[in-house]
Image (cartoon, rainbow, N blue to C red; front, side):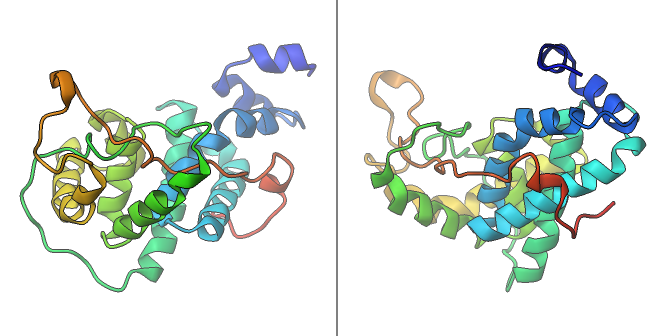
Length: 229
């Protein structure tokens, strides 16, 4: 399949061609989605090596399990579900404690940006590390829900598909996670928690998104081991 044909094919078409033996189809899927998968993994796990391993595991799993895809969800949702599961597997092993349920409906909109910045300046590194340290205090399931909804900008219904849980469960996990995180992160907002942003609009603190890093490349993504088929 030539480059033009690859670029025009949909994700589901590429996955089908991969199953049929096309040697380039899965690499194109990886190229399209690896940055966002990497962002989810890094923010969920808070450790670059662990995130890279989780993405590697997820891509190997997707590569091997492509024949099981039935089109009941978008390919990107399927990939994110596999990636989140790989992250949760690693996070559960590393978790030392769990938080207690607390009711809180305030979003992290004033602290977290929903999308990965393509050019986050290096001086923001300390804030990024502080954010990731705070995220690691959450139980893995709450952390994954917050990463998808508050940091990656997924609608709750789509996050529920990725996590394979009811929408109410996602809402509950997000509320509990926000209640735990806000006291830890409120100092990152220059005007303090609860203050109104200038002009009355939303005011996400700049610099709290995680800087991108080189994710697994197309070739390495399908050569490593450890993925769940």
